[in-house]
Image 1 (tube, rainbow, N blue to C red):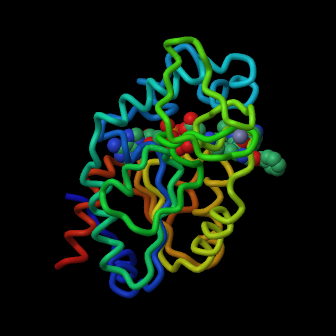
Image 2: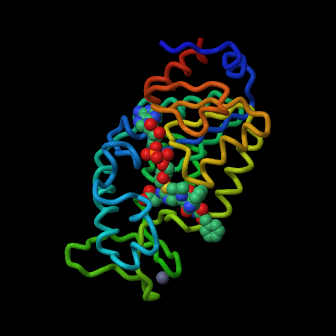
Length: 244
Ligand code: BV8
Ligand code: ZN
């Protein structure tokens, strides 16, 4: 059982606009490897070296091999109690927005409606040049890289390091963070920007900031309360408290 501080109790009862930022940690209990954890997504490389335009330009096969490897994992996994609790919270609070860094689509699969995917979605592919969605399966076994009618290379529809996020989604994330009176940061190491600035923006605009993570992060110092533990266990306990 977790200890819920009285000021969080009060916020849970009075909050009108709630926003959540999630990272890879919320999908860990579903079996999706996190980026920087010890089981690290791809042993030999760091995501910052593979999830980049340069890596794709230099070695599209290797980058696609990494994404197809991750797609296969994600095809086998299901949302966990942490994802499902956020679906319940969306129904419970007057205004609720879910901002995610994750590209695994598990929030939508769990039933969340208002999900802002800051970094895109790994299951979608698009043309590198004209961004036209590419619906066919990617098969690189043949060694032939899929190309768009315009001649552009097909890539995963995710935001790589050094790439701009969608301005529309980013602005939406900034505005829900500014407006939130209760903000949860769940399962993120809070080092990737501009995503990691959302909790600080919420805090600066008067939100009560809750962190749920396995280990301390740069947010732990500014959080109003920090639960160190598994999101799949802590989020359901907080929801239990809401229902009582
Ligand atoms: C941009 C999609 C600029 C691809 C991803 C120096 C300083 C500051 C910033 C920068 C800098 N140098 C470069 C930058 C900018 C860079 C950045 O922030 N780099 C970082 C590494 C320092 N950002 C960018 O490049 C962004 N673009 O800035 O554009 C620009 C400006 C003008 C003009 C042009 C360009 C784009 C960033 C997006 C990159 N794409 N993903 C893909 O997935 O392949 S980011 C990638 O990391 C994932 O999306 C992931 O979600 C994200 C963040 O990682 P986390 O989600 O936090 O995961 P992590 O493993 O790190 O942590 C998991 C946590 O969960 C851990 O703390 C763990 O303890 C905890 N946990 C584990 N299990 C559980 C748990 N918690 C609870 N319960 C559990 N069970
Ligand atoms: Zn194209």
